[in-house]
Length: 205
Image (tube, rainbow, N blue to C red; front, side):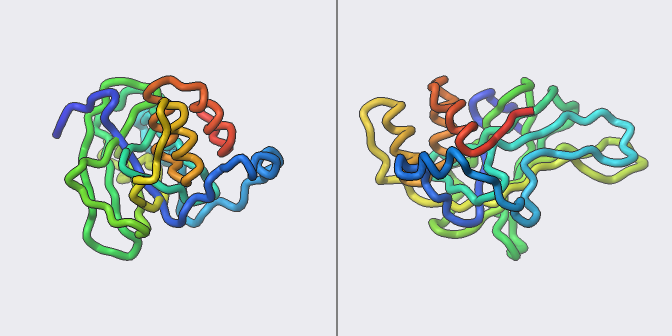
C-alpha cells in the first residue's frame, strides 16, 4: 500500500470523444445530455443499511459519452472527506477477466485529487477500458461499496502541440483528449478548467 501524493492519482473510457472544436461551439451551447451510458456512474450513491458514513466520490468525466485519455493517464476525482479506508482503483477491459491495473491508495486530503495510472501499465490504443474507484463499507453486517465507474478509451497523443500550457490544453481538446486537457488545466490552475467542466456539463457536488 502506498501513500498518495496529492498530485499523483488517475482514470479512463469506451468510445472516442468528439472533440469540442470551435465549429461545435454553437451546437454545444444548446447541447442536451443524452441518456447515461449503461453502467456508467460518475457519482457514488449511498449504501442501504451501511451504518458507516462513507465519503461521496465523484469522477470528473462526462456522463453521456465515452472520453479519451492520452499519455497523462490521469483522472480527477472529488472526495467529500478523507476516508478511513484506502481508495480501491482498477482498470479493466470489458468482458475480459484479467485486470489491467489494481491498487489501493491512501487518501490524505479531501476535495479534488488525481489518480494516475502508472507508466509501466501499457494501455493499447483504440481499446475500450473501464475505470473504477471504490470505498468499501466497513460494517461487518453489510457487504458493499461506494463506487464510481466510467468507460474510456486510450490513444497516443503525439499530435499535441502548443508553446504555452493554455495552447496545449486547446490542442488536446481539438484532438479529443478530454482527460489530458482537464488534468493539465487543473494542475496549472488555468481558466480552461472551469470552462471544460461547463462545456461537458460536469457539476461538482
